[in-house]
Amino acid sequence: MSPDPASSNRTIIHVPRRFVAHEWGGTETVVLEISKQQKAAGFDPVIITSMALAHQAHDDIAGIPVDRYPHLYPFFGLSAEQKAAMDKKGGNLLSIALLRALLKKPDVRLFHAHALKRLGGTVRTAARLRKKPYVVSLHGGIYDVPAAELSDLTKPIQGKIEWGKPFGALLGARKVLDDADHVICVGASEAEKARAALPHDRVSYLPNGVDCQRFLTGDGARFRAHHNIPADAFLIVKISRIDTQKNQLGLLEAFAKFHAATPTARLILIGPETQPAYAAKLREFIATNSLSEAVTLIPGLSNESGSLVDAYHAADAFVLSSRHEPFGIVVLEAWCAGRAVIASKVGGLQSLITEDKTGLFFDPDSATAADQLAAHLTTLHANPALRQSLGEAGRAEALAEYDWSRICERLESIYQLAEQSAQRRWPK
Image (cartoon, rainbow, N blue to C red; front, side, top):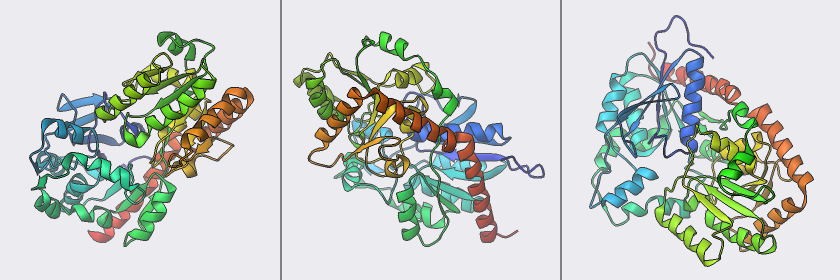
């Protein structure tokens, strides 16, 4: 993967909905890691995004320039609280300033949209006006999303009058995927459904990756000591934003059952609180069930923090209990740390994890979900050899298939396909 010496167009523009270091998630990890690989290969990646949750317009994160532009949500009657909720998750924003930036950026090779709706339409419009290729990554899914998750995303605007529909129509917000030069799905099931739904075959399954070397070693004892976790406690860790989609409540219900039989067990939930009301509900459950000494909530760790790596190495088991999960980068990170993984049998996790080899599954929507998860925790607690074998198999899988260098080689091939598509659309 290296730029054509004859071409001056080396700028790759990534457009996520938001991008701030203090509210980190899977999409931010993907965008940054891809950008770092592209920079190392000789390209000039830049992240252009909104001011959502940001304090400054221009930034540099791990050597990658980040340019942010003012935005709004075109609905009448939104409160400041509702706007903040949309900044945190799923807000269908509008930014004319961002469109102007996309139109003015020099030496553009390709646009890479990491969002749909009006923002995706903004990328589509810039690409068409400049006759440049654009690709779209479906990080959160669109064809493989439960109805409850979609309802949750739209809660802040329920009952509000939208005045931004003409802008969406002008930007072609509903045509983003149809017109894309390539659509990238991080989950295999999403890719299958996208191929069936779209009027073209420009769809690829490209899983997310992991910085394997970063997560191979860590100081679990230091993390335990810092958070007052006894060295001999059976520690369960979950790292994801505090959000109904991530289903921390389901994990707490299972942990309460497991803790009743294993009182030395401990649970740590790490992640930014994208839904404060849900976080309050978790705290209420913890207090009501007398789990305050056994459960620790850490609002978030910086992506670059060594404590994040140490958290994985402190764990005896890592749990991803999501109700919906297009991929699950944290599983790769846990694997690299050699941790045993228990995960929901949903979305992209079904193709990522091989049951009983690289992880254990439970059904988060089952009436017996808490019992299933508690049983897996009991099994891992009683069987250190199983924990080790699951962790070692996961680590081998991550090293062989998911290092970012390997993933970005495949991404470059997709970019080249997108460029061929654009050339057919706008022959020189």
